[in-house]
Amino acid sequence: MAVWIDEQGTIVRPAESAGIERSPLRDMEVPDGLPERIDRMFREVKKIPDDAENYRAAIVDWVEHGAASSFVLSPDEVVSRSLPRGDDEARAAACFELGEYLRRTAATPVLGQAAAVPWWREAHRLYPSNWTYKRQAWTLVTTPEGATENDLMQGPNDVYEGNWLDDVIAGGGGEAYTVVARL
Amino acid sequence: MILQTLDALDPEVFAERTGWHAKPEGMCSGEVCVPAPGALRADSTLDVALAARHLGMPVIHDETHGVWAIGPATTNGHALTTAVAADPVLATRDGQLFRLSSLLGRKVLLVAWSSY
Image (cartoon, rainbow over all chains, first blue to last red; front, side, top):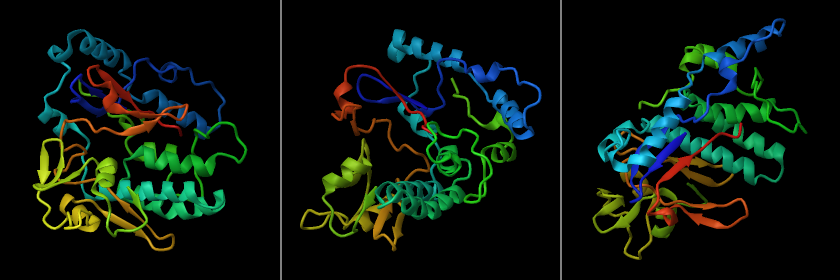
């Protein structure tokens, strides 16, 4: 996600998907013989839209032309293009923040996780298309204790209803995973 | 915004954490003001529940842990009500405080990424 802010402190592009380098995951060869679930995950990842080259060019254009850049939006456009936020989305934000706070401040990690889960489940229910709320919660239950890296598979678990692969497929597949910035 | 109580809150704290400033004309963010009669008390503290109601901010309570979470405003159906950038104070990697407005006069590309 990126936000563009001009020299006067005015947002000229609201939060949007942003990349400046095409992910190698889009062009990877999926090797034969992978476990079915991993194979399916890789194939969905390859379908995720990637417009990094155009987005990088837009940034460069803004740097060179400033307010005259065709990628600069008016204040009204900035507001109208910002993410939808109704009562459910706002409640989900509060629930997610509350869960994060409880997890961070609990006496022990186990207590923190137990306190956070109900609020994060509620955030998922209220705002099912928000990947941040879901992936952050999933990875905390699917990453093995002591692991040095987060579990990016975020597979089925007994704490939350969803998981990465099944939710991606249910949401329309990798093609629908990211909303490409409207340049 | 996480609070331990909904009792009187310093309006400056509310503004720092939500971007909404209590002014005589109402609760204001950038050029947008929402009438909020009664939110700013005579003793100059803020009635958080009332301010939240005027701004369409959900108020979530965890009774077990005695904390409240105030969600973002929903005054216009969008995440932003104004194109005026917020001015958060963030911690740098070496623990120093950094205010976004310190970059006024320069273009800013604010990038966020996920840790999961």
